[in-house]
Amino acid sequence: MIICPHFASQQSFLDPQLTKDGKPYAPIRYKKIIQDCYSITRNTNIDYQSVMNMSVTEREYIISFLLEEAKKINEKNDEIQRQLEQQRQQRYKK
Image (cartoon, rainbow, N blue to C red):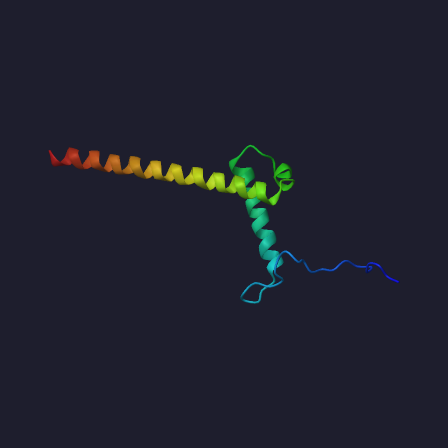
């Protein structure tokens, strides 16, 4: 009686095997994980190995925090740009 096979199944019950257009999903998912780890390492003071040891949820939270912060910075920059443009227009009106 064989309780478990000699080789573990290569199929994951969590991720799909193929994308909607029929391409293998694993390379795309792996690239996304590495991209997330790179982004966290680049924008924080956390080393790559520590990021790799984080849970998926933890990485997603940090990415969302970084995106929120970048959005706020962009909004502030846009506001400053608008103010500078208004000041420039007022100078040339006189």
